Image 1: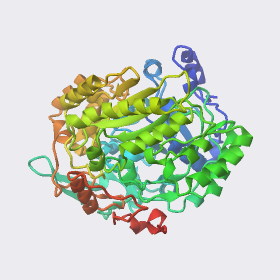
Image 2: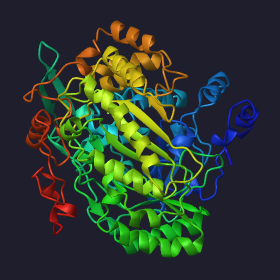
Image 3: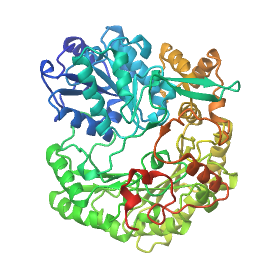
Image 4: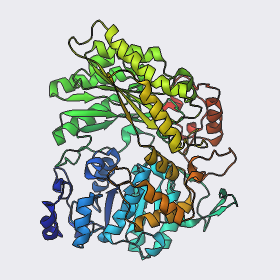
Length: 617
């Protein structure tokens, strides 16, 4: 339980929603004697406990760091608005769950950046901890603010606030930086000396060691490394997944979280090359774990946590090289152990009778597939490589197996999209409904429900669409209205994403350092939880942009030329810019690219000399 501030915190716990978010003391949480550790690391997730505790990256690094006697890693989550108000009223600083100590007592304050609209939470958490927001205002060799995660693929909107970014996968580079800090602390080095030495480690980006020059039109003229910092920062990557660290236990939460089950990571990367998908390009090449390793990790996790459900995690689970063999191996154990298997991220063309029979223990609550676009032309343009007949065949298999609920994920606002493509989403949903009633083996006496979810496309860095213009709010609203009107049956439920939050996401996804002053002013105004409807205030954001003299449309609705210097061009994720340009051009001809196992397209990821790039095809 909480060791410090316990009296102050205990007085307010009964006044907030879900007090279990703030107490600590969970099964398998790690408590150490702080007088016997050299490094204290506060792992901060800039969202609520329920979301952060579901994040696999936090589980991995928390356990890995704590496997070393000289490191104590603790967890910190963004308090919800009711808790924050009481903490500020009573001058209770943001604290870590394991010790109850304030963040000012930690060597490292580390954030994982998974979503652009969590950026204000990063600054709000620092503010709540009493830590200066700007890196230049933190002079000493302590409270080093670091960040990793997907959004560090373009770290520039946070460049003024973060001392050091981890680029790529963190298991090795994080420990190397922690050990460097340990030695610098021991030898009396300054913060600046530490950061300069850290910049020499592959996978580390120190923004204070770089200057940016701009053209008169606001685009970047030059990105300049200083003091011997590398001109290009290469991502770090773990190539041998069987040898990579993986937890043998998870912290078991006290309150229900979003994904409350054990998780087994079966591979990293994706073979498919969908042109909108940032994760698919950032994590190349595909690297798999062996069946034996996966089975061992599943058994150990369930034994040590008590979970009776385990999810197989990847970007596209059915693309595991021998998915049926893996499921056969796992079900022999899980059936006896009373453990159900969850297989998310299924491809439309990957759900077969064999796979269905292996996951029959999963609750028949619904299956999820992502056709992404309503017409074949647009699916080819985005390189989705899924045909309508494959989707209907897959749904037929599911309906025959007893499923009656199907979720279909789409995007609107994709490059080259027309209203005909938008209408095609409704038609495809109707085709799935019709397929249910054609299925003779469907569940008798039950109706079908097809959920059509349409998110708004946001162009992301390091993808073939990184140069594309984003649809305006008005365009997205018009398409959402047309799609809603095109659905003519109550058997289809329609969900869609708020166009204004997608717009702001787009601003920060492809933003540059000039946005740091916007972020600072937003923090001064108390902005946080922008991804939540309860807190998001679009008009207030537009006022901040106006006061800062920045036009957000510059980052969203403007199409870039291939020769423009992009804010993230100095980061190398192994996929060449030339390849991304080629893929972007193919999109306009609806020309598809085969997946990595069918044919190598020379994207550049073969430079890592492993994974799918060296598999026998």
